[in-house]
Structure formats: structure tokens, C-alpha cells
Length: 201
Image 1 (cartoon, helix red, strand yellow):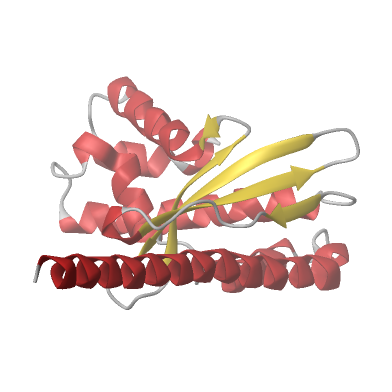
Image 2 (cartoon, helix red, strand yellow):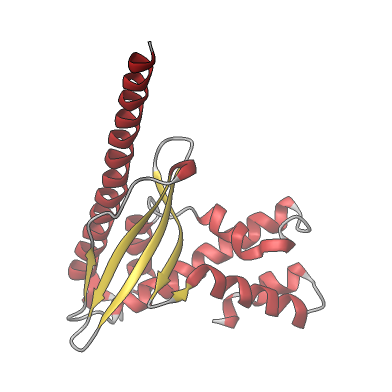
């Protein structure tokens, strides 16, 4: 009986490990696919950025949006002030945050020439709550910058990006610090912070 129980536990553990490895690979593969789509957009439309920046940003937005959970990231950026905000303010900030993030990202990508983004093989197993880290390398002519995407499986079992760390710089914390600084500077007035968010970059 004891031997049978132990064997049963090992079977469960093996199935869990297999499921975790498959899920980790799917996060890695999903990021690869999205990055491939973005690179295709860059190659095909990079020269049009100066003529039609809005069109370029829209193309990047279409390619990037499936990967990013803008609602969850904007909530994390608002941090302790999220509960103080009204539903309208939360929606307004999510919209303006999405716009500024995509604009910043698109302008950065427009400057890419010989740089390369490599999605590295997955490391380890899926952690609790269906979270996974996807490791990257940004390769330039002179240096390689390490990067990490923090991913999670949403209720539809789609992988979503909720934070980025590039060369040790935590993007989520950088945005949150920026939001907190604006709140303190503007007497904790969320409406003013939302209004000034775009010009703060």
C-alpha cells in the first residue's frame, strides 16, 4: 500500500513537471512569436517612421498589444494610489499609460539598426500562480544587455507581460517611482498627474 502511494505521488509530480515545462516553453515560444512579428514591422515600416510616425506606432501597437497586460501594469504603476482613484481615473490612466508606453517603445525601435533581440531558452520550471520569467539578450555592436520579461497566464490561459527588467533597470519600478513623484509634486491630485503623465517623458 505504501509503495503504491509513493508511486502514485511520483506520477503526479512527473505530470506536474511535464505540464510546467510545456507551459514554460509556451511562454518562451509566445514571446519569440511576438518579437518576430515586431521585427517584421520594424523591417517593413522603419523607413516610414519620419513620414508617418502615428502609423508606425499603430503598427507596433498591433504587434505588441497581445503580449502586454496594460491594465495590470498601469495598476502596478499607480501602486498605493490605485485604490484612491475612481474607476474613471483608473481607465483614463490606463489609456494614457498605454499610449505613452507604445510611443516610447516605437520611437526606440525606430532607431534600431544592427541591434538584435534574442529570446533565450527557458530556465527552470513554472513558478506558483502560473508565472514565468523569459530571459532576453539585446545585442548591439559593442555590448550585450540582459533582459527579463515577467509573464503570467491570465484567465484565458494566454501569456501576458507585466514587467520588464533591462540591464538591471526595472521598468515597472521606474514608472511607479515616476507616478509617485508626480503625485507628491501635485498635492496627490490624480487628475493632474494623469494630465501631466505624457509630458513627464
